Image 1 (cartoon, rainbow, N blue to C red):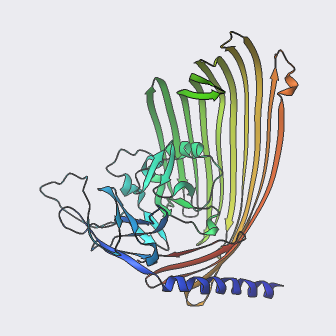
Image 2: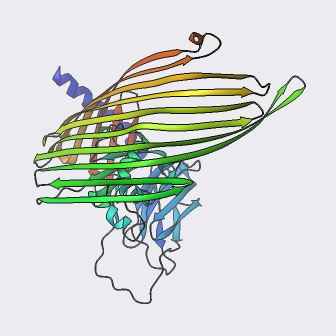
Image 3: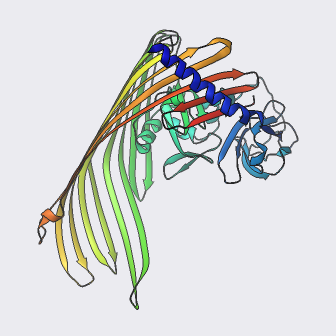
Length: 496
Protein backbone atom coordinates (compact mmCIF):
# COMPACT_ATOMS: atom_id res chain seq x y z
CA UNK A 1 0.00 0.00 0.00
CA UNK A 2 2.80 2.39 0.90
CA UNK A 3 4.72 1.57 -2.29
CA UNK A 4 1.59 2.24 -4.41
CA UNK A 5 1.18 5.64 -2.72
CA UNK A 6 4.80 6.55 -3.50
CA UNK A 7 4.34 5.52 -7.15
CA UNK A 8 1.18 7.63 -7.42
CA UNK A 9 2.87 10.68 -5.88
CA UNK A 10 5.82 10.25 -8.24
CA UNK A 11 3.65 10.12 -11.36
CA UNK A 12 1.50 13.07 -10.22
CA UNK A 13 4.61 15.20 -9.77
CA UNK A 14 6.10 13.94 -13.06
CA UNK A 15 2.88 14.66 -14.97
CA UNK A 16 2.63 18.19 -13.60
CA UNK A 17 6.27 18.85 -14.41
CA UNK A 18 5.94 17.61 -18.01
CA UNK A 19 2.72 19.53 -18.63
CA UNK A 20 4.16 22.79 -17.35
CA UNK A 21 7.77 22.46 -18.50
CA UNK A 22 6.68 23.20 -22.07
CA UNK A 23 5.04 26.40 -20.78
CA UNK A 24 8.24 27.45 -19.02
CA UNK A 25 10.25 26.66 -22.16
CA UNK A 26 8.11 29.09 -24.16
CA UNK A 27 8.56 31.88 -21.61
CA UNK A 28 10.52 34.98 -22.43
CA UNK A 29 11.18 37.87 -20.06
CA UNK A 30 10.24 41.48 -19.47
CA UNK A 31 13.35 43.39 -18.48
CA UNK A 32 14.60 46.90 -17.88
CA UNK A 33 16.29 49.27 -15.47
CA UNK A 34 14.92 51.48 -12.69
CA UNK A 35 16.63 54.79 -11.85
CA UNK A 36 15.94 57.83 -9.73
CA UNK A 37 15.61 61.39 -10.98
CA UNK A 38 19.37 61.76 -10.56
CA UNK A 39 19.96 58.92 -13.02
CA UNK A 40 21.43 56.59 -10.38
CA UNK A 41 20.16 53.00 -10.08
CA UNK A 42 17.12 52.58 -7.84
CA UNK A 43 17.80 49.61 -5.54
CA UNK A 44 15.28 47.22 -3.95
CA UNK A 45 12.34 48.48 -6.00
CA UNK A 46 9.48 45.97 -5.90
CA UNK A 47 8.28 45.42 -9.49
CA UNK A 48 4.92 43.70 -9.87
CA UNK A 49 3.64 42.62 -13.28
CA UNK A 50 -0.05 42.35 -14.28
CA UNK A 51 -1.78 41.51 -17.54
CA UNK A 52 -4.02 43.94 -19.42
CA UNK A 53 -6.92 43.03 -17.09
CA UNK A 54 -4.83 43.78 -13.94
CA UNK A 55 -4.44 40.08 -13.10
CA UNK A 56 -1.26 39.33 -11.16
CA UNK A 57 1.51 37.57 -13.12
CA UNK A 58 4.85 37.85 -11.30
CA UNK A 59 6.99 40.01 -9.04
CA UNK A 60 10.68 40.69 -8.43
CA UNK A 61 13.08 43.22 -6.91
CA UNK A 62 15.60 45.46 -8.70
CA UNK A 63 19.31 44.68 -8.20
CA UNK A 64 22.10 47.00 -7.04
CA UNK A 65 22.42 48.10 -10.69
CA UNK A 66 18.70 48.88 -10.88
CA UNK A 67 18.13 45.98 -13.30
CA UNK A 68 15.15 43.63 -13.19
CA UNK A 69 13.76 40.65 -15.11
CA UNK A 70 10.30 39.05 -15.01
CA UNK A 71 9.30 35.81 -16.77
CA UNK A 72 6.37 36.02 -19.18
CA UNK A 73 4.75 34.21 -22.07
CA UNK A 74 4.88 36.73 -24.93
CA UNK A 75 1.23 36.08 -25.81
CA UNK A 76 0.33 37.94 -22.59
CA UNK A 77 1.79 41.21 -23.85
CA UNK A 78 1.04 44.07 -23.31
CA UNK A 79 1.54 44.15 -19.54
CA UNK A 80 1.24 46.57 -16.65
CA UNK A 81 4.25 47.13 -14.38
CA UNK A 82 3.92 48.65 -10.93
CA UNK A 83 6.97 50.04 -9.11
CA UNK A 84 6.84 50.36 -5.30
CA UNK A 85 9.32 51.61 -2.69
CA UNK A 86 8.97 53.59 0.52
CA UNK A 87 11.37 56.28 -0.80
CA UNK A 88 9.73 56.71 -4.21
CA UNK A 89 6.25 57.53 -5.44
CA UNK A 90 4.37 54.53 -6.77
CA UNK A 91 4.48 54.28 -10.55
CA UNK A 92 2.14 52.15 -12.68
CA UNK A 93 2.61 52.04 -16.44
CA UNK A 94 1.63 49.97 -19.52
CA UNK A 95 4.32 48.40 -21.71
CA UNK A 96 3.93 46.80 -25.16
CA UNK A 97 7.57 45.74 -25.56
CA UNK A 98 9.40 43.21 -23.31
CA UNK A 99 12.34 45.64 -23.24
CA UNK A 100 10.85 48.44 -21.12
CA UNK A 101 14.08 50.45 -21.16
CA UNK A 102 14.86 52.87 -18.36
CA UNK A 103 12.08 53.71 -15.89
CA UNK A 104 12.51 56.91 -13.86
CA UNK A 105 10.96 57.11 -10.38
CA UNK A 106 10.18 60.29 -8.46
CA UNK A 107 11.72 60.48 -5.00
CA UNK A 108 9.68 61.52 -1.97
CA UNK A 109 12.77 61.97 0.22
CA UNK A 110 14.22 65.43 0.79
CA UNK A 111 17.81 65.42 -0.46
CA UNK A 112 20.50 67.05 1.67
CA UNK A 113 23.69 68.70 0.47
CA UNK A 114 25.90 66.13 2.18
CA UNK A 115 25.26 62.47 2.93
CA UNK A 116 27.47 59.92 4.69
CA UNK A 117 26.79 56.25 3.88
CA UNK A 118 28.24 53.83 6.41
CA UNK A 119 26.76 50.53 5.16
CA UNK A 120 24.14 49.03 2.88
CA UNK A 121 21.34 47.06 4.46
CA UNK A 122 18.58 46.03 2.03
CA UNK A 123 15.00 46.45 3.18
CA UNK A 124 13.76 43.65 0.90
CA UNK A 125 15.12 40.53 -0.75
CA UNK A 126 13.65 37.74 -2.85
CA UNK A 127 13.97 34.15 -1.69
CA UNK A 128 12.04 31.11 -3.02
CA UNK A 129 9.17 33.20 -4.32
CA UNK A 130 8.89 35.40 -1.21
CA UNK A 131 9.52 39.11 -0.77
CA UNK A 132 11.23 39.30 2.64
CA UNK A 133 10.96 42.78 4.18
CA UNK A 134 12.95 44.12 7.12
CA UNK A 135 9.93 45.52 8.95
CA UNK A 136 11.98 47.65 11.36
CA UNK A 137 13.66 49.48 8.48
CA UNK A 138 10.31 49.97 6.77
CA UNK A 139 8.90 51.61 9.91
CA UNK A 140 12.02 53.67 10.59
CA UNK A 141 11.42 57.33 9.81
CA UNK A 142 7.65 56.88 9.49
CA UNK A 143 4.80 57.54 11.91
CA UNK A 144 4.18 53.79 12.43
CA UNK A 145 4.02 52.89 16.13
CA UNK A 146 2.75 49.28 15.91
CA UNK A 147 2.91 46.25 13.62
CA UNK A 148 -0.36 46.99 11.80
CA UNK A 149 0.75 50.49 10.84
CA UNK A 150 4.16 49.15 9.76
CA UNK A 151 2.57 46.55 7.47
CA UNK A 152 0.43 49.23 5.84
CA UNK A 153 3.69 50.98 4.86
CA UNK A 154 4.93 47.98 2.84
CA UNK A 155 5.20 48.68 -0.92
CA UNK A 156 2.06 47.52 -2.71
CA UNK A 157 0.00 47.25 0.51
CA UNK A 158 -3.01 49.54 0.93
CA UNK A 159 -5.74 49.87 3.54
CA UNK A 160 -9.39 49.98 2.50
CA UNK A 161 -12.40 49.76 4.82
CA UNK A 162 -10.12 48.81 7.75
CA UNK A 163 -8.69 45.88 5.75
CA UNK A 164 -5.23 45.48 4.22
CA UNK A 165 -5.04 44.70 0.51
CA UNK A 166 -2.20 43.84 -1.86
CA UNK A 167 -2.26 45.86 -5.08
CA UNK A 168 -3.75 43.83 -7.92
CA UNK A 169 -4.64 40.92 -5.63
CA UNK A 170 -7.41 42.15 -3.35
CA UNK A 171 -7.98 39.93 -0.32
CA UNK A 172 -4.88 39.48 1.83
CA UNK A 173 -4.33 36.95 4.63
CA UNK A 174 -1.97 37.73 7.52
CA UNK A 175 -0.39 34.82 9.41
CA UNK A 176 2.16 34.66 12.23
CA UNK A 177 5.25 32.42 12.12
CA UNK A 178 3.80 30.47 9.21
CA UNK A 179 0.67 29.57 11.19
CA UNK A 180 -2.81 30.71 10.04
CA UNK A 181 -5.34 32.13 12.47
CA UNK A 182 -9.14 32.01 12.59
CA UNK A 183 -9.42 35.64 13.72
CA UNK A 184 -11.54 38.01 11.65
CA UNK A 185 -9.88 41.01 9.92
CA UNK A 186 -11.15 43.36 12.66
CA UNK A 187 -9.86 41.08 15.43
CA UNK A 188 -6.51 40.65 13.69
CA UNK A 189 -6.20 44.42 13.28
CA UNK A 190 -6.78 44.87 17.00
CA UNK A 191 -4.06 42.31 17.80
CA UNK A 192 -1.48 43.77 15.40
CA UNK A 193 -2.27 47.31 16.56
CA UNK A 194 -1.36 46.26 20.10
CA UNK A 195 1.88 44.52 19.05
CA UNK A 196 5.12 46.59 19.14
CA UNK A 197 7.23 46.73 15.98
CA UNK A 198 10.24 45.30 17.83
CA UNK A 199 8.44 41.93 18.09
CA UNK A 200 8.64 41.32 14.31
CA UNK A 201 11.87 40.27 12.61
CA UNK A 202 10.69 40.00 9.00
CA UNK A 203 7.50 40.28 6.98
CA UNK A 204 7.34 37.73 4.14
CA UNK A 205 5.01 38.68 1.27
CA UNK A 206 3.76 35.83 -0.94
CA UNK A 207 1.48 36.64 -3.87
CA UNK A 208 0.45 32.98 -4.04
CA UNK A 209 1.03 30.89 -0.92
CA UNK A 210 2.12 27.21 -1.25
CA UNK A 211 -0.36 24.60 0.07
CA UNK A 212 1.62 23.93 3.26
CA UNK A 213 0.63 27.40 4.51
CA UNK A 214 -2.97 26.11 4.68
CA UNK A 215 -4.32 29.36 3.22
CA UNK A 216 -5.15 30.46 -0.31
CA UNK A 217 -4.10 33.52 -2.25
CA UNK A 218 -1.82 36.35 -1.14
CA UNK A 219 -0.20 36.11 2.31
CA UNK A 220 1.90 38.25 4.65
CA UNK A 221 3.77 36.03 7.10
CA UNK A 222 5.03 37.85 10.20
CA UNK A 223 8.19 36.22 11.54
CA UNK A 224 8.58 37.10 15.22
CA UNK A 225 11.93 37.71 16.88
CA UNK A 226 13.63 34.77 18.61
CA UNK A 227 16.41 35.77 20.97
CA UNK A 228 19.61 33.76 21.52
CA UNK A 229 19.96 35.05 25.07
CA UNK A 230 17.77 35.38 28.12
CA UNK A 231 15.77 38.57 27.76
CA UNK A 232 12.72 40.38 29.04
CA UNK A 233 10.84 43.28 27.50
CA UNK A 234 7.63 45.11 28.26
CA UNK A 235 5.66 48.03 26.92
CA UNK A 236 2.70 50.16 27.99
CA UNK A 237 0.72 52.13 25.40
CA UNK A 238 -2.03 54.74 25.56
CA UNK A 239 -3.82 56.59 22.78
CA UNK A 240 -6.74 58.97 22.45
CA UNK A 241 -8.96 59.49 19.39
CA UNK A 242 -11.58 62.20 19.04
CA UNK A 243 -14.09 61.37 16.30
CA UNK A 244 -17.30 63.15 17.28
CA UNK A 245 -16.74 61.71 20.77
CA UNK A 246 -13.83 60.39 22.80
CA UNK A 247 -12.26 56.96 22.24
CA UNK A 248 -9.58 55.67 24.60
CA UNK A 249 -7.17 52.81 23.89
CA UNK A 250 -4.68 51.47 26.41
CA UNK A 251 -2.62 48.30 26.50
CA UNK A 252 0.47 46.49 27.69
CA UNK A 253 2.72 43.73 26.37
CA UNK A 254 5.36 41.50 27.92
CA UNK A 255 7.83 39.09 26.32
CA UNK A 256 10.19 36.67 28.08
CA UNK A 257 12.66 34.75 25.92
CA UNK A 258 15.43 32.21 26.34
CA UNK A 259 17.39 30.27 23.69
CA UNK A 260 14.96 27.33 24.05
CA UNK A 261 11.58 28.92 24.75
CA UNK A 262 9.69 32.18 24.72
CA UNK A 263 6.39 33.39 26.13
CA UNK A 264 4.45 36.56 25.52
CA UNK A 265 1.30 38.25 26.79
CA UNK A 266 -0.47 41.17 25.14
CA UNK A 267 -3.53 42.97 26.50
CA UNK A 268 -5.37 46.02 25.21
CA UNK A 269 -8.53 47.80 26.30
CA UNK A 270 -10.58 50.11 24.11
CA UNK A 271 -13.55 52.24 25.10
CA UNK A 272 -14.89 52.93 21.62
CA UNK A 273 -17.52 55.15 20.05
CA UNK A 274 -18.63 54.40 16.49
CA UNK A 275 -20.96 56.85 14.68
CA UNK A 276 -22.37 56.00 11.23
CA UNK A 277 -24.74 57.68 8.80
CA UNK A 278 -26.22 56.45 5.52
CA UNK A 279 -28.51 58.21 3.05
CA UNK A 280 -30.81 56.25 0.74
CA UNK A 281 -32.63 57.70 -2.25
CA UNK A 282 -34.50 55.46 -4.71
CA UNK A 283 -37.29 55.62 -7.27
CA UNK A 284 -39.70 52.80 -8.17
CA UNK A 285 -42.24 52.64 -10.97
CA UNK A 286 -45.51 50.89 -10.07
CA UNK A 287 -47.89 50.96 -13.02
CA UNK A 288 -48.00 54.58 -14.13
CA UNK A 289 -46.93 55.91 -10.73
CA UNK A 290 -43.37 56.91 -9.80
CA UNK A 291 -42.67 56.27 -6.11
CA UNK A 292 -39.72 58.05 -4.48
CA UNK A 293 -38.20 56.83 -1.23
CA UNK A 294 -35.82 58.84 0.92
CA UNK A 295 -34.34 57.53 4.16
CA UNK A 296 -31.57 58.79 6.46
CA UNK A 297 -30.16 56.36 9.03
CA UNK A 298 -27.94 57.36 11.94
CA UNK A 299 -26.26 54.79 14.20
CA UNK A 300 -24.31 55.47 17.38
CA UNK A 301 -22.60 52.60 19.18
CA UNK A 302 -20.43 52.54 22.28
CA UNK A 303 -18.80 49.70 24.16
CA UNK A 304 -15.74 48.23 25.84
CA UNK A 305 -13.37 45.93 23.96
CA UNK A 306 -10.79 43.65 25.59
CA UNK A 307 -8.10 41.99 23.45
CA UNK A 308 -5.93 39.23 24.93
CA UNK A 309 -3.09 37.21 23.40
CA UNK A 310 -0.82 34.70 25.11
CA UNK A 311 1.71 32.52 23.32
CA UNK A 312 4.27 29.91 24.26
CA UNK A 313 6.95 28.59 21.88
CA UNK A 314 9.45 25.84 22.62
CA UNK A 315 12.31 24.88 20.30
CA UNK A 316 14.05 21.77 21.69
CA UNK A 317 16.37 21.60 18.65
CA UNK A 318 16.97 23.28 15.33
CA UNK A 319 14.02 23.00 12.87
CA UNK A 320 11.73 21.50 15.55
CA UNK A 321 9.22 23.43 17.61
CA UNK A 322 6.07 23.35 19.72
CA UNK A 323 3.71 26.30 19.94
CA UNK A 324 0.54 27.10 21.86
CA UNK A 325 -1.34 30.35 21.20
CA UNK A 326 -4.52 31.81 22.71
CA UNK A 327 -6.32 34.86 21.29
CA UNK A 328 -9.39 36.35 22.89
CA UNK A 329 -11.64 39.29 22.03
CA UNK A 330 -14.34 40.11 24.56
CA UNK A 331 -16.92 42.87 24.42
CA UNK A 332 -18.97 42.54 27.60
CA UNK A 333 -21.39 45.36 26.77
CA UNK A 334 -22.34 47.09 23.53
CA UNK A 335 -24.99 49.78 23.48
CA UNK A 336 -26.29 51.32 20.27
CA UNK A 337 -29.09 53.57 19.06
CA UNK A 338 -30.30 53.59 15.47
CA UNK A 339 -32.65 56.19 14.04
CA UNK A 340 -34.08 56.06 10.54
CA UNK A 341 -36.19 58.94 9.21
CA UNK A 342 -37.72 59.36 5.79
CA UNK A 343 -40.69 59.10 3.49
CA UNK A 344 -41.14 55.36 4.05
CA UNK A 345 -40.73 54.81 7.78
CA UNK A 346 -39.54 56.43 10.99
CA UNK A 347 -37.79 53.86 13.18
CA UNK A 348 -35.94 53.97 16.49
CA UNK A 349 -33.95 50.91 17.63
CA UNK A 350 -32.27 50.65 21.02
CA UNK A 351 -29.94 47.65 21.19
CA UNK A 352 -27.72 46.14 23.87
CA UNK A 353 -25.65 42.99 23.80
CA UNK A 354 -22.29 41.32 24.17
CA UNK A 355 -19.98 39.04 22.21
CA UNK A 356 -16.82 37.02 22.75
CA UNK A 357 -14.32 35.16 20.58
CA UNK A 358 -11.88 32.57 21.90
CA UNK A 359 -9.24 31.00 19.66
CA UNK A 360 -6.58 28.47 20.63
CA UNK A 361 -3.97 26.94 18.32
CA UNK A 362 -1.40 24.23 18.99
CA UNK A 363 1.23 22.85 16.65
CA UNK A 364 4.21 20.54 16.58
CA UNK A 365 7.01 20.36 14.00
CA UNK A 366 9.90 17.88 13.87
CA UNK A 367 13.32 18.31 12.32
CA UNK A 368 12.42 15.48 9.92
CA UNK A 369 9.94 17.81 8.13
CA UNK A 370 6.71 16.51 9.69
CA UNK A 371 4.25 18.94 11.26
CA UNK A 372 0.79 18.59 12.77
CA UNK A 373 -1.53 21.11 14.37
CA UNK A 374 -5.02 22.12 15.41
CA UNK A 375 -6.87 25.43 15.58
CA UNK A 376 -10.16 25.86 17.46
CA UNK A 377 -12.38 28.95 17.59
CA UNK A 378 -15.57 29.62 19.53
CA UNK A 379 -17.67 32.75 18.91
CA UNK A 380 -20.74 33.85 20.88
CA UNK A 381 -23.02 36.83 20.30
CA UNK A 382 -26.13 37.91 22.19
CA UNK A 383 -28.33 40.98 21.67
CA UNK A 384 -31.66 42.40 22.74
CA UNK A 385 -33.37 45.15 20.75
CA UNK A 386 -36.46 47.28 21.21
CA UNK A 387 -37.83 48.59 17.90
CA UNK A 388 -40.55 51.22 17.43
CA UNK A 389 -41.93 52.17 14.00
CA UNK A 390 -44.14 54.95 12.69
CA UNK A 391 -45.16 54.47 9.05
CA UNK A 392 -45.97 57.24 6.61
CA UNK A 393 -49.67 56.50 7.34
CA UNK A 394 -49.03 57.31 11.04
CA UNK A 395 -49.40 53.67 12.05
CA UNK A 396 -47.37 52.78 15.18
CA UNK A 397 -46.03 49.43 16.29
CA UNK A 398 -43.22 48.21 18.53
CA UNK A 399 -41.61 44.90 19.47
CA UNK A 400 -38.61 43.24 21.11
CA UNK A 401 -36.03 41.10 19.32
CA UNK A 402 -33.87 38.60 21.18
CA UNK A 403 -31.09 37.29 18.87
CA UNK A 404 -27.92 35.31 19.14
CA UNK A 405 -25.28 33.30 17.32
CA UNK A 406 -22.91 30.50 18.34
CA UNK A 407 -20.10 29.40 16.01
CA UNK A 408 -17.59 26.61 16.61
CA UNK A 409 -14.79 25.85 14.16
CA UNK A 410 -12.04 23.21 14.31
CA UNK A 411 -9.17 23.08 11.84
CA UNK A 412 -6.81 20.06 11.79
CA UNK A 413 -3.79 19.84 9.48
CA UNK A 414 -0.69 17.76 8.85
CA UNK A 415 2.20 18.38 6.45
CA UNK A 416 5.28 16.43 5.40
CA UNK A 417 8.35 17.45 3.42
CA UNK A 418 11.06 15.16 2.03
CA UNK A 419 14.42 16.37 0.73
CA UNK A 420 15.22 14.41 -2.42
CA UNK A 421 18.40 14.28 -4.48
CA UNK A 422 19.61 17.16 -6.65
CA UNK A 423 17.91 19.78 -4.46
CA UNK A 424 14.37 18.55 -5.15
CA UNK A 425 11.78 18.70 -2.34
CA UNK A 426 8.57 16.68 -2.16
CA UNK A 427 5.72 18.04 -0.01
CA UNK A 428 2.28 16.63 0.74
CA UNK A 429 -0.37 17.00 3.41
CA UNK A 430 -4.01 17.28 4.30
CA UNK A 431 -6.38 19.63 6.12
CA UNK A 432 -9.77 18.96 7.68
CA UNK A 433 -12.28 21.58 8.86
CA UNK A 434 -15.41 21.15 10.99
CA UNK A 435 -17.75 24.08 11.52
CA UNK A 436 -21.02 24.41 13.45
CA UNK A 437 -23.24 27.50 13.36
CA UNK A 438 -26.42 28.12 15.38
CA UNK A 439 -28.49 31.28 14.86
CA UNK A 440 -31.74 32.32 16.46
CA UNK A 441 -34.04 35.32 16.46
CA UNK A 442 -37.17 35.55 18.64
CA UNK A 443 -39.80 38.32 18.49
CA UNK A 444 -42.19 39.35 21.23
CA UNK A 445 -44.85 42.01 21.97
CA UNK A 446 -46.08 41.96 18.39
CA UNK A 447 -49.79 42.49 17.77
CA UNK A 448 -49.85 39.55 15.38
CA UNK A 449 -48.52 36.12 16.28
CA UNK A 450 -44.76 36.34 16.77
CA UNK A 451 -44.24 32.69 15.92
CA UNK A 452 -44.45 33.45 12.20
CA UNK A 453 -41.36 35.68 12.52
CA UNK A 454 -39.19 33.54 14.81
CA UNK A 455 -36.15 31.77 13.31
CA UNK A 456 -33.84 29.08 14.65
CA UNK A 457 -31.26 27.61 12.27
CA UNK A 458 -28.37 25.20 12.56
CA UNK A 459 -25.58 24.55 10.07
CA UNK A 460 -22.87 21.89 10.23
CA UNK A 461 -20.10 21.62 7.67
CA UNK A 462 -17.22 19.20 7.03
CA UNK A 463 -14.38 19.99 4.60
CA UNK A 464 -11.24 18.03 3.63
CA UNK A 465 -8.32 19.03 1.40
CA UNK A 466 -5.31 17.05 0.17
CA UNK A 467 -2.26 18.35 -1.70
CA UNK A 468 1.03 17.13 -3.15
CA UNK A 469 3.83 19.21 -4.65
CA UNK A 470 7.45 19.32 -5.75
CA UNK A 471 9.90 22.20 -5.42
CA UNK A 472 13.38 22.83 -6.77
CA UNK A 473 15.73 25.77 -6.39
CA UNK A 474 17.27 26.71 -9.72
CA UNK A 475 20.34 28.75 -10.47
CA UNK A 476 18.22 31.69 -11.70
CA UNK A 477 15.15 31.27 -9.58
CA UNK A 478 12.85 28.68 -8.09
CA UNK A 479 10.23 26.28 -9.40
CA UNK A 480 7.15 25.14 -7.50
CA UNK A 481 4.54 22.72 -8.81
CA UNK A 482 1.66 21.60 -6.60
CA UNK A 483 -1.64 19.81 -7.00
CA UNK A 484 -4.59 19.41 -4.62
CA UNK A 485 -7.89 17.62 -4.65
CA UNK A 486 -9.77 20.33 -6.54
CA UNK A 487 -7.51 19.80 -9.57
CA UNK A 488 -5.66 23.11 -9.43
CA UNK A 489 -1.95 23.72 -9.36
CA UNK A 490 0.43 26.64 -9.20
CA UNK A 491 3.73 27.32 -10.94
CA UNK A 492 6.07 29.92 -9.48
CA UNK A 493 9.22 30.86 -11.41
CA UNK A 494 11.18 33.96 -10.36
CA UNK A 495 14.36 35.43 -11.76
CA UNK A 496 16.81 36.48 -9.05
